[in-house]
Length: 153
Image (cartoon, rainbow, N blue to C red; front, side, top):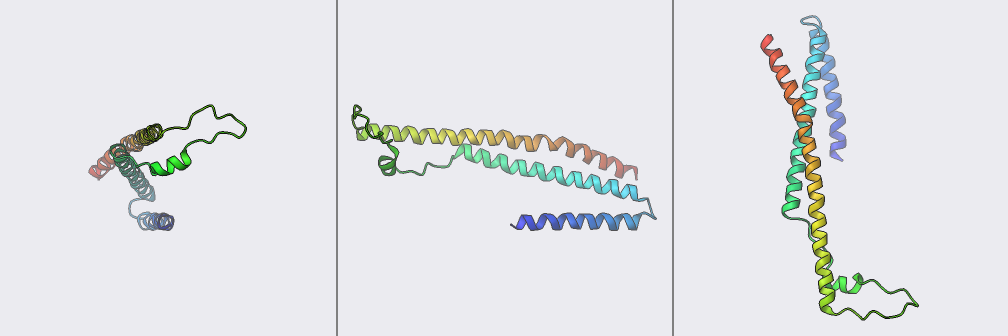
């Protein structure tokens, strides 16, 4: 909710800064240089935010791999609701499951859920690395371009 309010305010502030900067500097050094500088800073800001967001997401994915979310259904709940019912009219050829068999099925279900959580975390980790690896070279390129421009001044 707060983010949805902050983003438009930041965009409006950047547009106002761009307009004021162009008006003030058109007489001194030319408006095109100001627009180029603002563009470079916007690209640097956006790529830096993407890289930071990807780093946070990667950290969270590693945390999920190390300590996956627990399975919340207890054995008693599984015993009560987890065993599939037989359709009506079907014979009772299968014997009722013993406590040990039910416990083994429950433990297998818990382990499968843990493996699923770790697998999802690994998938998220790979996606998070994309949010780091893709914008970072763009950030470096524009950072070097900015340094060269400032050295030329």
